[in-house]
Length: 439
Ligand code: ADP
Ligand code: ZN
Image (tube, rainbow, N blue to C red; front, top):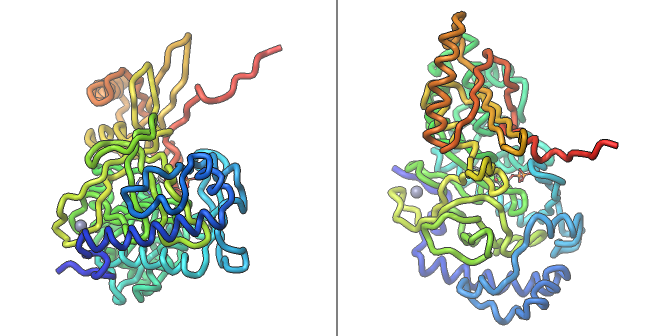
């Protein structure tokens, strides 16, 4: 039977949730207008007053915020509470540029832990579980977020942080970890190491994994589930809106429920800023309606995604977001064609390769080039050059079908691509490196 952490909220009838959102939104906008000069100026510039925002239907009237705004106001310009009311600071991983810092009051930390507790419960966690947190601890939100959520549920919490993979597995066995929390790329690495140590999933007590902080494909999910003998759940979040737990997956494993009592989602056209109807792909935008210290309104995540209100078999009424397909700035435009690293990952796993790959994009003689370095599994190695060329050719053909352009595929030896203990780096786009004119 499905268990909930907070059934009243997670299964709340839509009209009631809408009412709750309307009230919280109106109060939040007023608070932000009074306390955050930067946003007040933006609203004034647009001619919007707090009284104009009475319900979620009015949301579109508010100005957007983006990472650029957060960099401009770094570090204190978005604070809506005095520092004396704040108890914690976290920072983005800096995947796409200068880091952004976010502040939390005790209520903010509690709300975040509540969101993660919902995620852990949806993955089957109870106070009988041993939660093994192998997300990085520190400024990154992954470790602390799941840690606090695990405490809230009453699970026995192992604050492993990332790295030292052999020790992770030893503790997993000695202390009978049942739920693993880390990035999907690190979960894949742990799975690989388990096999190399001559162990099987039966040697572990794991039953579930809660994986997020980076995009991962369905193929990757199946591969991790097999290698660790678990059910793998997705979790989504970003530092700007607290951290992991903004949305979480239930037993249906088809999209993540958004904690709508705290975050109102919208999907917009990234070029025009226009709000798109449900079911269309666009950029995900979040409005935090309960956060006190760092309450971002209409924050543009740059994550590309689809929302759905289709009834979920788990009984939750919270709206669902599909797995983000990547960030709008992760999308590579190669010879005019849109390419996502996740498409490449799908083909690789389907064709029996490991999810260890590195994409290199460059421009030679004014033409974009796409090189995909793919690591072989030991059993794919051959000492006949012809065999290797055939394998590369087959893989390149499959890639061409998926992407619509011709890549160059290079099979590289097992273990030659660096493993990730946090967020994986899959792309090197040399076109972006600044070319200084030679004197
Ligand atoms: P940074 O933006 O520097 O990576 P964060 O650590 O706050 O900082 O990362 C948040 C971002 O991570 C999200 O905007 C999204 O792009 C990505 N992300 C988080 N969870 C997921 C997930 N489950 N699937 C895909 N992408 C995710
Ligand atoms: Zn569900």
